[in-house]
Image 1 (tube, helix red, strand yellow):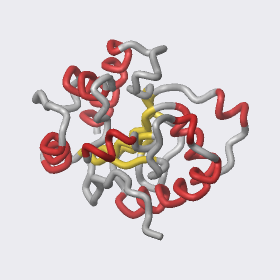
Image 2: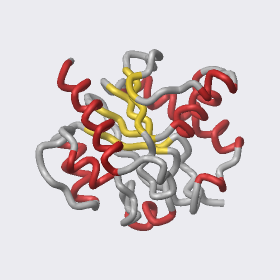
Image 3: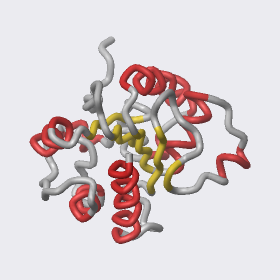
Length: 185
């Protein structure tokens, strides 16, 4: 049986930022790039932030530009695509989170950028170390105290339209804080 199609990683040595989503959407797998759902606010927040100095249209050419010119890569905690986070199982995290750990230690980006508390919390629980339920609930946005190898960790709200608790303006604010961290090093 052949493996299920998934979204390819944009990863390699020398990255400033490695963006880590929860898992690929079915549309992203079809289109060939992350955050492909038109309602996803990632591209709008990215374009309004100080992370890049140009406007990019969602698509593979933009991904190439982010990777080659801005040294921003992309991967996921879980590589199994689903229609939504509700379809993920504990087994998915147990399978894929250690794979992510290996990628992070191998490529050592300056900053690992997790999109959402669910992605970061479940990565910690299954990929790096055990995190108690109370500690997982205490996660705060922004720079995290934990490093993964040589990489700093930064967490922002998930830009998915399913995460309506955070506005586009709130996302832009957190993306700008990430940009300030990168420019301060």
